[in-house]
Length: 518
Image 1 (cartoon, one colour):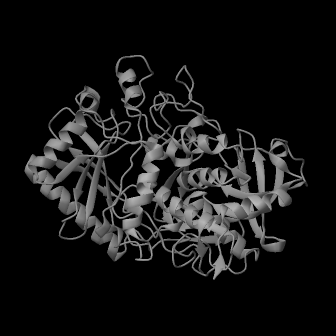
Image 2 (cartoon, helix red, strand yellow):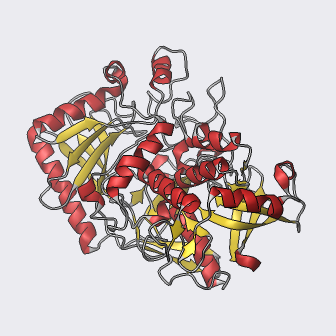
Image 3 (spheres, one colour):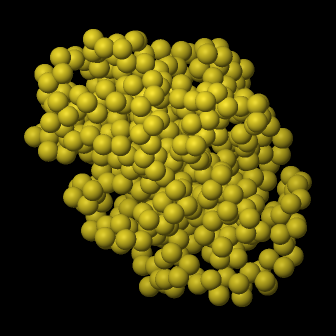
């Protein structure tokens, strides 16, 4: 058993260890070849990285956050992000086109907000920028039930503790709430009202769920005082009105205000390795907004927190293992990856639907499905036909996918067995839900469930296989995974952001105040 590090110990050791660095020196631009030394580095600024950053800063620990994407400050003019109607480089991460599902439009190569990882059997979407996927995730703050939680996670994670301490802690900062009735009653949320009505006819449980959205700003959009953004379904490229309460506006803002945390955008980490005295060396490229490398930097830290997302974190670990720079990593790195059971469908009805407007505000929970539990979430989608609407289903996918390192290209290839027995079971379960839904409402499936794309990639450095129950990587006392890579392929029929953040809060509590066991 090794001791965790308490806040007092940090304050005592940091003075001597970092006296020659200091907060002021963190503001300097370091020339190539210079090795910077800090106490902690966090790679990535999504839900796990934002939580880690805040708690490290509050503990008085000098921390650098390395984020590959740029900052996206909301402007008064409401033009921070591009739109579906006029896409440009801001839409996509270093790509000459927008994603094919969103039109495949030629654009300038730029450090845009949506990154697409094309794999074998699946394509994964993820965010890029200060705030990670929270910039484009729609605001869903959705907690799994205890019963379904334990169909995914081991009993070493105490659900009652999460429910009592860590889920509420995250909510206290995000402050999510359900859509108010006056907003739901508008034309922009017509489809959401239809779905609630149709679910009731089919005897399916449906409800509004909590959203990390500022509804007063949405009211301003409706009144014409803010640029229409949330109400017109602008989701995947970012919300220009500022209604989306992304992490750069809460967790990360609070972390920076401690004075101990510096967030560095446009820093792409390329290597992590073990250094002397139980420290880690992090190598990164500082890039410009066109993706051109303008500087190479090296940072040595005592504590390293990986929060680059399921794919980003796993790729860094696979590269370190393949090159021998983290030799003690488990052979399970890259395995136990999943798509959270994501599948897209189109429901056709004879009614007007306004299918490109509104947001993700309601959920249908078919937990008593005779084949497997299923969740349906209606959401706006550009180009969806009138008289229909798009729905995303979530299910209990098994972590059957994996990432495999390609040394020749220095990248990790994503592989997903979409035709596996369990994925066929999920397909049948979703179809069973839709069958009952359609029979009750006279609707039909214009497109059956399509699981070729996921917005919720999970796994690759999972609990038990690569990490202990608190995210500490086996074999490395001061290396931690605090993002979706920790979760074995599914978040128990929910969108994973809330659970990622709650698990990160739990890990940081143990790191700062308790003991770790391998």
